[in-house]
Image (cartoon, rainbow over all chains, first blue to last red; front, side, top):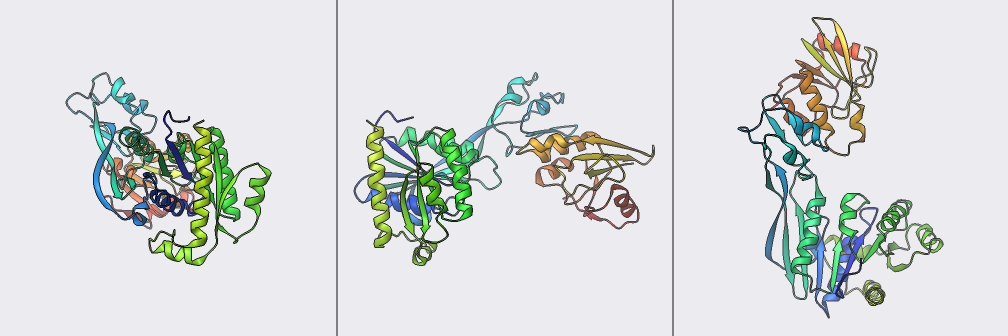
Length: 294
Length: 115
């Protein structure tokens, strides 16, 4: 759905991991920051790494919670209904107590609402943090899930809400999304105005690109493709995009020095061949943004 | 004494299922009654998460004294089993339930310490 203002929410996603989402997100955000305010949001909450490339001070940390039941020994009669009700096996009746697995809980409240003894009141459970990192015009929000948490979606949804509450004045919002096509990718990209699918010209890249295209179509999000490591591999990704009418918005050349510098945590906008891809991509996205906002 | 096997079938000749949470069958051998009773656990196959706790709940309700399995329970399941405190023997994958029982009886299976 298009935003009411002229906010442009751009998701950078991919089926396959390691195709260059973070490379593109951080450099595109940095490019925009040369002349405008830009918000970069790291939604790869299980392994966030945008902060390696965007150097700045953490100005604020927002703790994030999900609601989980807390077992009340004084009220419980150990009937076990909660165990049967839970769709996610987050509760186990071990005879003399109910064990709650906070990491498995989807915060649906069913056990809590249906407990006839009111023995499972909901409480806040800390799942991770959102750090705010400022680097001149660029503001980075980094979502980070705590180790041992298994549910990135709740945190990703929280980050989206936080953006809408506190950073809605930012016209450019770039969401660096987790790889794959599972719940966390859907939660990251599903409400964005446009999805950039980053891929590589290999059989794996193509296979997972097709899955990501299917996901974008199911979510009814407009999308385009960026081919990274272009010049290596084969032409199958390009042919697939051409045959299916999918726009290729950029081709990042296969160049070992890009990989070397990326591995040192450097941005690459001072590299001419790379900068021209990002600059041209920005112009195309700007046209998309303007056309979407009518 | 009750001995629980994670198994791929419901017979003595069935193979031990190396998986705990996603074991297809839970077989209980009651040494006093000399009977083998099977519980179909294949319903966990459709679950993306929580197979370990779902199976652990069933195991808890069956309350075996001994568990014979393959890889051993994962962290979530192990937390449940602490409340039952059975002896857990692992690395029985590849064996039939019968052979695993004989190996256990001979003291040739390795026991997993539950901490």
